[in-house]
Image 1 (tube, helix red, strand yellow):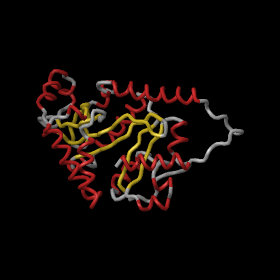
Image 2 (cartoon, one colour):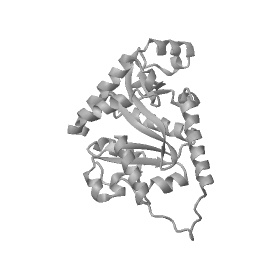
Image 3 (cartoon, one colour):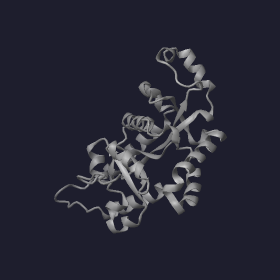
Image 4 (tube, helix red, strand yellow):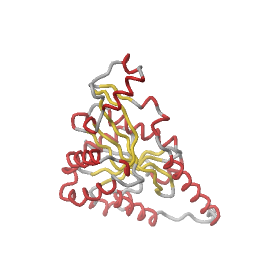
Length: 274
């Protein structure tokens, strides 16, 4: 779905009004190249980090609403075969209905995307012996033993994200946030997205962006509550008439003034999404 999003962003760039030279001096070629190099270096540095979770110990475990979960980092080109099959299954369970007739072709694309070297994952795994009380959680040796005992069958969900450039800005793009039906509505998805936002800020990304199917009203409502807005790069903002024909919206949450000016529409909020 991000391929369509990229097309929309390219159109947005072409339609953005040019600033008159008497209002603001255009940057020199040297300045443009310098900025481009700085953005590329920012992305390169973020991609090189082996484990983004190690900087956020408060997000290593989630124990609420009947869930006892720990989080792990992963890479697309290092996923085990059982892990890939799990991801394929949960994608089908959660996304076949929102995509409708587009799903067969979209599924093939998603399966290619999930194993790409640039794909980064946050994997939510359930402790092998169920809920762990606070005292046992403090014993690192026991916790490590439980981590090792858990296999792919303990997975409850995942986030697939990447460090990319959008509108000449370094951003984190969330390709997927998927939860097992039994884990939905218990705060774990919110917890994981908040972690992605922390990772984005730590690595000097200007925003978190993602694509949501219009038919997926639960997802739209979820991101609305987390203060995501429809991006100025979304088809409905680039060209409202054409946007009506598209099945998705591009959402964003920005972290600095430059990203806000390039990726948000002034006063734009998600309204009337149930």
